[in-house]
Image (cartoon, rainbow, N blue to C red; front, side):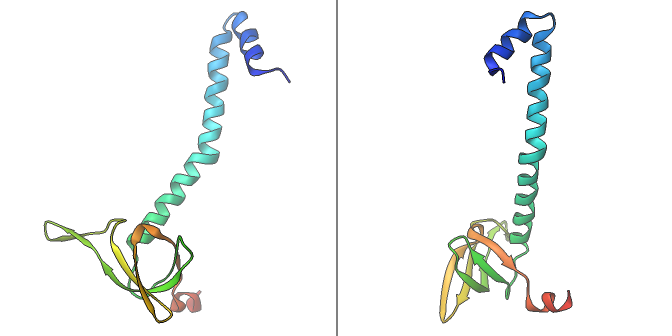
Length: 119
């Protein structure tokens, strides 16, 4: 295998070698984008939508591994309208304890028991 620097010098010494090199780097970037970046962006968007649709009674798992049931969501307001952000305080019940976590720290929302039975 030829090291990249030697490969680049060989391409630049031939006529039109610079454009071939740019084309190769462009193709590598496109492959990287479609295999790595785009799926991560799509997954992040789906997770954010699920967090915005969080409701009372949902079973959640926090990023720290705490499992609980949502019992109250305190949403911020702007101009009198509720605004759902990742800093909203979510009160969860886990065992006999109530814990307040930020909406953005919720790692996963488990399906409701009624949704599992209907599937």
